[in-house]
Image (cartoon, rainbow, N blue to C red):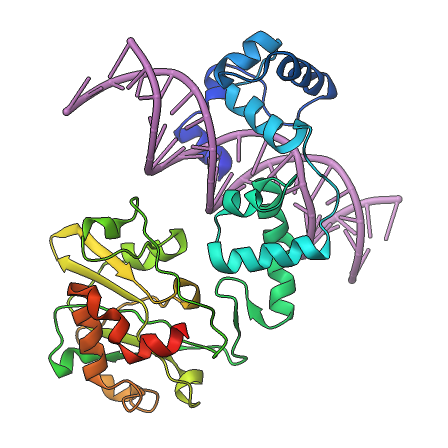
Length: 303
DNA sequence: AAGTAGTCCAACCGCGGTACG
DNA sequence: GCGTACCGCGGTTGGACTACT
């Protein structure tokens, strides 16, 4: 895939016929000597001045991730691992922000540790590394309540499946990069893993509440925490999402069947715990977020 | 010993933001 | 305002290494 992508768009190193791949000790020595003496200044001019056949980007990366004198290196301590887990619960995959809290560690190092080790450890403890929530043992199988039949036709929601009562405090982000910023009413910033649902806007003419069979068979209440919407069918810019706590979200692929026979879902549908008027309140929130804090399902979740 | 699968991590890629002419 | 170059970030890849069969 990497090679395929390379063919589509050649990297700067490729275009300039520069060296790529692992750094030799000689190259390290040259870069280290140059930066120690002159500082890096403009990265694009570093390779030229240091006598390296590399692109500036590659030099920068090598310096930041390997040559910098303040790097700690070596294995992570248990304290560091725990701190990373805690920070990830708050910050998500913002590796550079996490790394800023761990002196001598790079974002790349932390990212690798997370992907190769910490995720696994959390799963072994029965914690979902994405949500930092306890994992329900039974494999959830999505089912949908389609509120089209209740007259809520103009909006699509994808709710979170609240799996435990251990959720941490709510995070409502402000992100100028988010598609949400196109909607002045909302501050929540969906991150990359959330974009799937936001971009998956095949159908926005239904009001859909996914839940799970395992949840439906238990007494777990599933608040409609995550809402994806499209204000205007013809304008994807007016699409976004909001959530009480995006870390609590298990995204469901919302794929609505217009010609559904919804009876087959009724055994799993939690009509009693999800009264339509609460969903209406969520819809109201989308247009007026000041009502957000008065919504009981949200209140209980952020406590 | 040889082959295969899994793990780890350095490095690369592509994108968005910013600065500057 | 526009185009370009550069920087920084997060996601992904590829290969070295290790464990297993």
